[in-house]
Length: 127
Image (cartoon, rainbow, N blue to C red; front, side, top):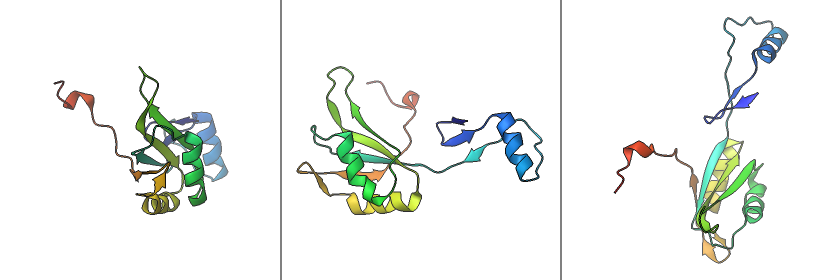
C-alpha cells in the first residue's frame, strides 16, 4: 500500500482484488483508491526550546498523534518556530485545535490551526 500526498491509500491491484472478492464485488480497472482522513495541524509561535516530544504530549490527551515535525532551518539547524502534527480523527483534531490555540508552551502562547496547503512556488514573485 502507498500513501499519497493527498492522504489517499493506493493498494496494489492484487490486494484490491482480494478485498473486493471478500465483499463479492468485481474490479473493472486495476487501480482502486481509498480515501482516508488525516488532519494536518499547524503549530506556530513555538519557543526555540520546544521539542517534538512536548508537542506530542500536549496533543495526545485529545487523541492519537500520528506524527510531529518541528521545522528547522537547514543552514543553522535551529527551529523556525513552527511545527506540523498529524491526527487521524477529525473530531479529536478539531477539539485539540479549538482548546489548544493561544495556550502556553514554554512560556510562549502558541497558535494552533488546521494546516493549509502549500502555495505553488511558481505563483510567488522572486523579489
